Image 1: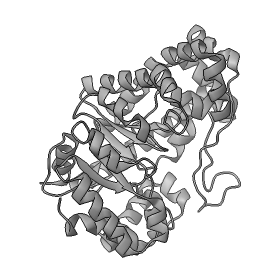
Image 2: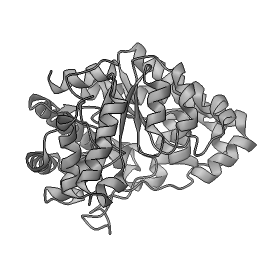
Image 3: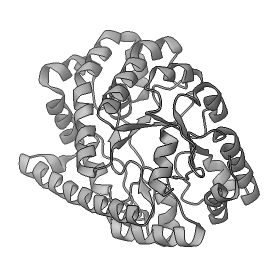
Image 4: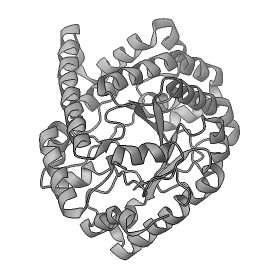
Length: 377
């Protein structure tokens, strides 16, 4: 099997010739490869060179999970509140990329989304936080730069595929409306209060935003040519919502979004940060054998195997703390457990628990990448 076949077999709940390994590695590979985080985010050619050195020294991978390489300008454009970017403004070139969470939407605006139209409403919010988008010409120029960068990232993904490294999701980043509102519009504290104070208005805003979330994701799928999407989930997890709230507000969105992608031949990669363990039973309502449950090390991945192993591919979840603070023998032992227990009958992809830390021990990363060749389900 080649890497692509290995990954697709696991996604379809089959058992490949060995467990595929698909980490989130670009922050680490930039540091290891001798370039700054700014270079990784804004120069995909340098990012590729750094990754090439990393893989040459530490071992091969089957695929790249979500990669920020070359997406700096795109990330600045698509979020209503621009993230902190290393090397931009007063930030040091080798600082860390970071989302900025602040309230840019008042509670009275929930009903404005449908009345004014979600696209216009989002664009107005983006202009407030990004003065460089003040005029239609400014927006056109920004879109042109972002499109050019997407083309470079697409060429990079194509080149890596030719070398046996599959790009899992490229820049296909999608959010459910509730996740989008909480992370980028209302902020966590205000959003949670809204669920109690304005539940029907929150639902109305989510319904209005849903077509735009689908449209944005569909555009990215067309541009990348990759039929998988990264769906980030944290604010609708069991760390933040009660089961009743999840059933009422979040589950209908996750079902609608996943069914939408699956009906179009696109695989949702559910990148679930925070603790989702209590909500695992609900995930059986998602299409069987068509989604990937990607856990970050907070949820109980072994419970996921017990409850969902016959329903969806499980991906994860070597913890960041282990990669940074552990020893190679500890990393290898944890990976052995994942491979032999979670991957015992297929449907498993080994990955880092979210992002490999920028300062992880290289010998630990090497142990993780080598584990799929050392151990068999």
